[in-house]
Length: 362
Image (cartoon, rainbow, N blue to C red; front, top):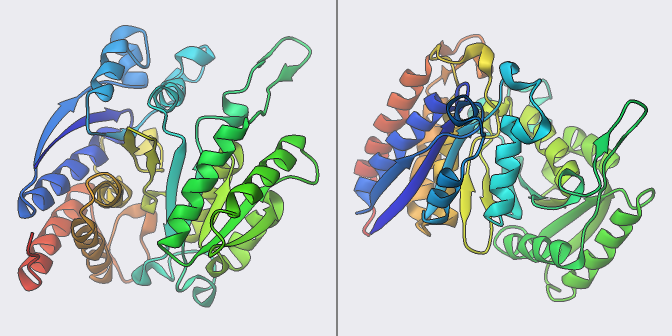
């Protein structure tokens, strides 16, 4: 099998974690008779510096021709004063919209070795394993009109029926593969758009009678994620609320550096760590590559349809953490502080060891 992967390392620590992801892809791919063809392109601030555009037509065209896209991170202090349409983050929004990536899958899994790494009590966290499923191409981030003048600013939060229906269907389909429970998060006590959202989600649920559906207001959901995260399986929510809740989920796992993500559409898929560009540590070999590596596991699962490869990567992450290796963002007393490269090298060694001990027949 041969797959074409467009790499978009981007800004800050993006190139460092992308390099780690590529090493894991090559390593695991060789074990499952998979060849990867990599095509690296600029995006975000790096693209703006080179072309005056955070996402060029050439880069977008390459993504259209790829089997999957892997993105490192975009953004940084030096581009914050640019007009909205030229900011690095605008490139990411345009990429998601152009590729029709309407479903953002963000797992929030607490690894056993990191159960004491959060500020929350271990008995609250142990066993936490849920997904935030965020609608990605609609809502307030894309609604029109938008803008500001000297006296006021305005944005529009809008969803049509098809946008809500397709993300709800994705939620119930994922739930069927897990614990058959969906929590739909909205603000229906205040927002008409949330009342509409809730109505459509309940209509879709009629086609999935085996899946339990709960409704929850977003403010309560934020509290419950911290109070009792094990109650959740699939959290289904809108673009804005999903953006916020997935970052809260990042803190219960110990660090945003631990959160992978997949953005899925009907044809295309984009994989990226959630942590952002972290320009303050860029180029210092301090970045946590585990979210990028876990995103590779998601790629094997969702796009390449090789669950055994995904399990191999996930098991290697668990084993590496159990050995006490930590980058600075997840470091605790008694552990070994390692660099980005050292963490990646250990992951690769553990992948090899696990594969030898439990060879997979492809």
